[in-house]
Length: 146
Image (cartoon, rainbow, N blue to C red; front, top):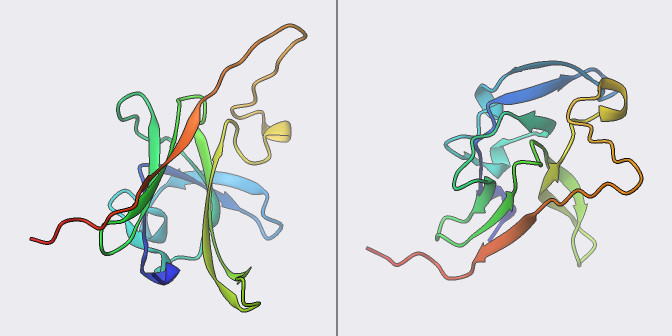
């Protein structure tokens, strides 16, 4: 399945806008290519952005890549992962050495540039514990045809 034909879906309602050095300078409500709440074809996207304000479902956040035949991969996180970077690139080199389109879903517990902006930064002191959970759920079988 060509990556271009996959659908990327995320419930994020806010995206960080970066300057020319990819340092976040503002946040805005998702719109256009950044509004992935109903899914968008990966081949139509140009992303390298941090997203937040996702909607919890069954106590977790979920982002999916879905093929037209219904096969999918879901990346889920607990509420500690309140941010995610979504990336599409045409510079990924496949096993034949050719450049191809790739997509990455990167759950994060803090916003990009968190050491400077402190958004979501979680500091642990000696002896502190912090448990976070995430996972990947594949749907390997195509959806039944109707």
